Image: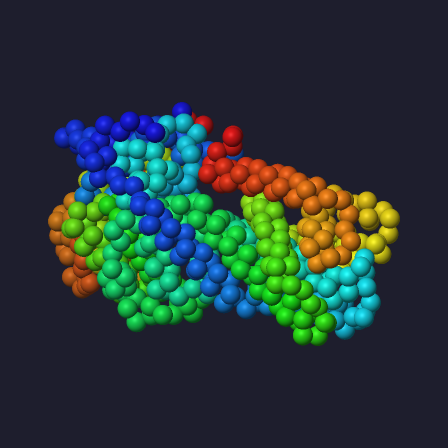
Length: 271
Length: 317
């Protein structure tokens, strides 16, 4: 920072930690309210995983088993993954692309808002929606699918899925910096849907063609689903550590891309 | 090489301590477009400065540089003596920008609550609503507001932090006359409390009504700076408006008349000195009516300045 010779420096004040925390919480609160009140957004993010789960997990095949777990239980893990991924992508990418492209983000950046609060708010909002989705799936599975598990196991599943949504929030941020406001939803779907299919989130992994199974190994949602499946007691492949490793690496890459996008927006074209 | 018009020099050397914002030798390009060329620009404490220019002249670019939203290709932007991206500086500024989208599902009061929270000593929300004329619609969602009301919310977000320096980018676009006047009053009130305002506009009347100092910007260059009177003085002369049966060619031939325009039922004469022309007109046409004599407005000055600048630019190309 330049050493200012001006008299202004006497009047510059730092924020207290309490004040900063208030900003973060308010930012998250209003981001969540804003999205919640957008009925189309809430509906699509919540209803698709729930609808698919009800159809494929509770109505059809309900009495069968896959990989050692009942279908309703198995699909809770896979559609849970599908749901939290969607909540993360649509929560971050679409909003960010729109805010950027139409100038709102510039208004916020021109203000004293700590830039990180903006991202924090988007991630927290996605996590809240993710939690709602997993709770809804469990409630339906419990009520109609005979899904039973100890509380600790459910807590583990919820924790894994919500934590596992963070890589997709990072992906959403990276996407949001490189798509335009109108094309964002379509671009997200173009990536989200094929990725979900190839990861075995709809058609279970063992029923996928061999070639697609190879592709799945490179897909982050596959790894998250495997972690979730491991918790609900289905047989899964590879170790947890390997799956987490892939997710963490994926998050780092996405954050790197997002950071480049962030700096481009600042008008800087170099690191 | 682009020639620039002589800028009027102020008698007093600006005191560094009173300089609130500045652009020093700033160049900004978007690809091949030179949005700002070697711009030197100062804003002093307690002033209302208007950056006046047509669309595309570089006004918004200048404001964004001072807000730290853009980096100059060369030169420096300074706010409160420091980098515009410094968060401590941002705590003392407020900005009203032209936006395509504001979250529509949040209420007016919620928007203001959130923005106020960023600042150290924000204004009370009731005061913000009152200043922006939003008292009755505080609970409405942004998406339910009219265009003018939306503008006022953006204004509220700019002032809610009680900033020392206010940036207003085309603040009264889309506002009706009453709202525009109200906003002007609010701006004047803020300046009377010691704030500084930089506003951009293409409404000449607005610059004339509000600004202590006007900087005329054209194709990325500041072609004139001064008080509104000083700018107007660049085109000397008067305008005479009258309804007369004299023909255009007759009017043109009167000595001292530089130009004759038709304006619906009347003629508008551009003259150097009004009195001899008026005497001549009344002598020639006893039935002349609707006589008005006014000084050349900011509009004339602006057009003259920008036409000169364009002509000079074309000559040197």
